[in-house]
Amino acid sequence: MTAPRLNRRLGLETPERVADGSGGYVESWVQLGVLWADVAPRTGRESVASGAPVSAVSYRITVRGAPVGHPERPMPGQRFRDGSRLFHVSAVTEKDHNARYLICFAEEEVVA
Image (cartoon, rainbow, N blue to C red; front, top):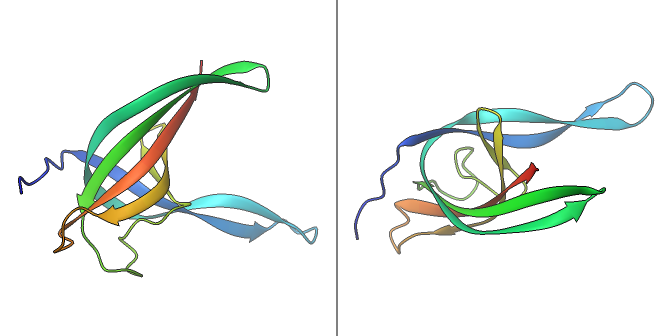
């Protein structure tokens, strides 16, 4: 197995509910840490949301392995941040049987 080039620094964020003072909550994002990753585009599509064209590109993001439950192991529902770019994680799996690397399937949406 060839080791991936982990040359992109991504922040790993998770959603957190914060009370809004009126009995409800507001969802905000909290950074869990920084991971080095290999980011490879897969496919893209264009759609319309709320009357505006939206470009959606899926990515295969490879990071170092971490055991299940560890804070540095990405999970579906979390996201990666690269500056103003956001990659929403939809699935995570081990790259090999030794789990040295994880593959995260993610999507980035951009309003055109």
